[in-house]
Amino acid sequence: MLLKGWIITTIACNLKSMASDHQYTHSGGMVFKGAHKMMVLRQEVAEALFGAKKAIVGYAGNSADIGPVFNWLSEPIDKPPKVKNTELIVLTSKKEIYTNYNLGGWTFVDKPYYAIGSGSHFAMGCLASGKGSSKAVEVASEMDPASGFGVTEIKL
Figure 1 (tube, rainbow, N blue to C red):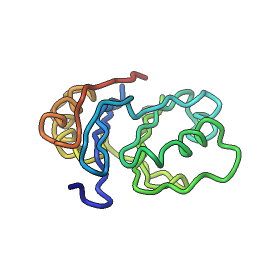
Figure 2: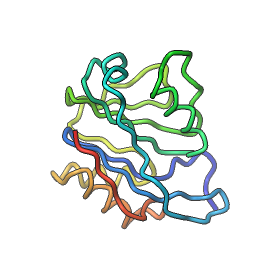
Figure 3: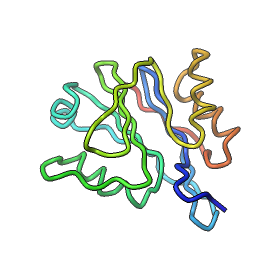
């Protein structure tokens, strides 16, 4: 049984790329392979939100809650939706990393790498050893039962 509020999955990034696993876990515990958990923002949106030509956004948490968030990030014209049970991570072409639990304010990460989700500690250890984001998610997937089913990497 999953713990309530447990943000499951692994998203890792360094200043070159972001990677995501493909595992989705149903509240009843059933696991299955799905799409990666990242999106590349349109240039106009990346410039407006982060002052960068390109930005990659990843999420860890409840996939049912991310639809409205990704829709807003595609066209941020109205008030941002409420974010519940989800953590976000952003990598910009300015080589900056941000994270948050809501769309109201982004926290700058003062490191050349970062990871979110239940496998984040495993991924952070791998990133700290100089490995890339894809390898970090691969390693986390071996150790974290809530991560797996392959890795997709998006490069800046």
